[in-house]
Image (cartoon, rainbow, N blue to C red; front, side):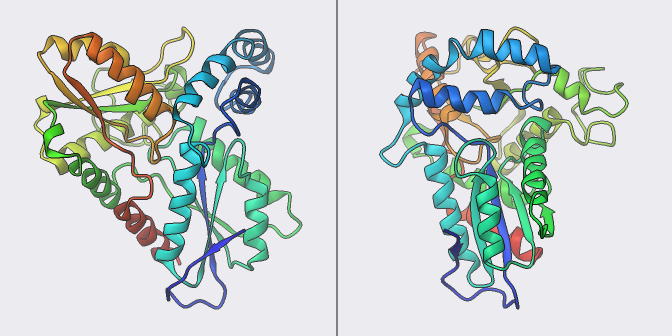
Length: 352
């Protein structure tokens, strides 16, 4: 059911549809549900960007026979009575954004993989007689594997309709002031007794080959140690460069000195090279520097999920303590924080 605002907003003859799109999660923390989700997720050629036959062999002979059981155990550690944290936070964001926007807007949530699915969400917006649909990918930094896949799937789902609705896609917002300010606000809300010695910005990783494919000329990415220092034509779609830009903007907003923060990348899969440094490998280096209390922010995720709660909040914290660190503080994602809702509402209204 579509969610509409409860307060007066921008008057319109027909409402503006807002479609929030995130990645997705299994329906349940069970091997069967996880296998179904991984088959859809890793079967996407933008995620496992291999030719069809090698992708099928890797997925069906190497990943699906073993990974669902281990992933189900991880999901079970974070599952709530309302379901997956990603879905719980997504619903809360949908509801809070609708209330913030008020009348004249209809807000829907959909997942690229799993439920709630894209096609029914677009159907509900069409039934609400929206003037057009503003697609909001919940991925601050652009990647072909996440943003690109989600936008492609939206176009495909919308294109199957007899009356294809007008679509507009919100650009990546990796260094938008409102986004950075919202992240900083959440970080500042960490209790005083948990103040860290150092801040680690941990982003979801990507294979190096996907970064290279984002370079239109194939001559910039990884050509030097400074290839991500600035963003121009050659790397305007570079996920790694956008992560660097987010980190710098956030560090400046938080008043951090250069020596007070570090960037790393998590969640790698397989043996091929992924973008570095790796989060699990940077932790020993930080301990060698004498850091005891480490705060970790995950700015590529707008909602807490398996990768933040379990991978960082449980596994990375255990690793940190085994290394002799005093504590690892996981700073929550934006979730449905009022500052994040305010930022989204501002972007939506400017496009109304």
